[in-house]
Length: 226
Image (cartoon, rainbow, N blue to C red; front, side, top):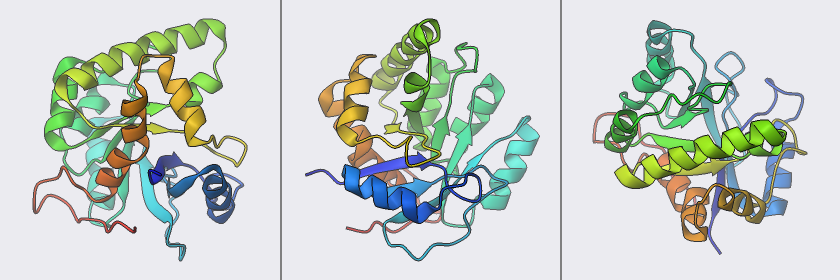
């Protein structure tokens, strides 16, 4: 069975749910590991659990702020995600090899902020594009149709330029977590094949954690636990 990994989970102190509870439920659902990617003002500093991956989701209003925060977190050996949505933030994220994941690449209004140029940069710099299934689960009919349309566009670009892609829950509580089979089924709604979804939940997240697509000397490589 694939070693499933969810690389976008939020826990205490950002939320009320301890990381240990989220990991326990995630493992019951079939995940081998999860990453706690709290926002940069509520970072989980340490954890003794082997199957818990430490990370951060950087939120920035300007490129200057983003670069400053990347310098702050870049040498800590954690998974670094950047909350996108703005085209300038998206570009600064995918151009920087310190970034591991671009989350929320389109704006809250569903406007596209991810072009073929940015996806090419993501592929060159090993920045994984996040397909957040919580966006589908929490949306209503009109909004869901718009999100599905943007995800289809995003998927076509990622396929064409062979950028890494991952599926995540963006869970903020144990009730937001979903089993891998549920995430795979949701991904089919916007055209992701079963094989692609399996890789996006196992092989690719493992590569992100191991910094597999980073050039030597660019980042501190994380260990992968079997």
